[in-house]
Length: 344
Image 1 (cartoon, rainbow, N blue to C red):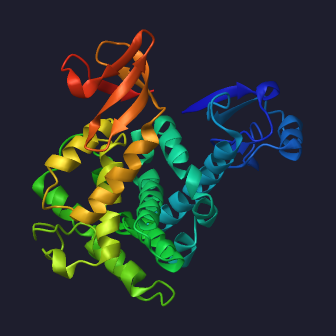
Image 2 (spheres, rainbow, N blue to C red):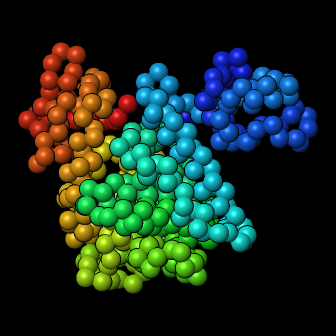
């Protein structure tokens, strides 16, 4: 979420959420993603800018370390968005710059979950195309760590996540942003993006072959029903399998132009049931068994309107945790009267 604040209410560390120009003149003072410090504050005052749009990171509830990572996330997001738009407009872009993004986030992976969840609550569907790639990279990195991959592989998996949808830069924006269901022709256009992305990465020697393969194959399914090549499980590499799980999870738990976000607990159930045969079982199970426990302590709203906190997650019933309410504990696995409607 973005809020407009009077300059006197801004603090060092606030992140500018729009380009700012001297009133009446096309001279930039600050650009989206700049972090306010004393020097920038002086420039804004000199330029007679008294109200600015900033990112609302809910500073009272977000730990300082997490907040700093959110600032870096915002910076990486801006860089990714610009590179994506440059590709869309036909400009020559160095994809190595995208592949090398988020290294600071990689070094602070223990706090990544809080960063991604906080950002999801702040960003709308209008930026989904860009936030999705950052999120998939971070989820992919977490999966790779949980699977015990070596450091080089973890970094490569993260690169694959960042690059997995880069081919969408060549898909018409109106299709990507369409609010309603896609026609068959529109979906066919979307389905071209893995091959386009693979071709964009093809000539860059510093991007390893496993990363390029993940860009090409992240929409393939274990049962051979995916695209673009309808490959089966044996022909799909591990990186592509990891990115596929991260891709599906982030899509389902994010606000998209054509579909509202679902709670993680709804998605746990759907991934366990409806994605059987589509996603790699080992990768999916490693992800679900680890990610679910990050939601212990999360604030949730129930179908009754009551607000509580996730107190415990059952390893065998990830979608039905115990929730602590004001008047006691509710075990959702043992009653049909309660269900989690949203994270808050």
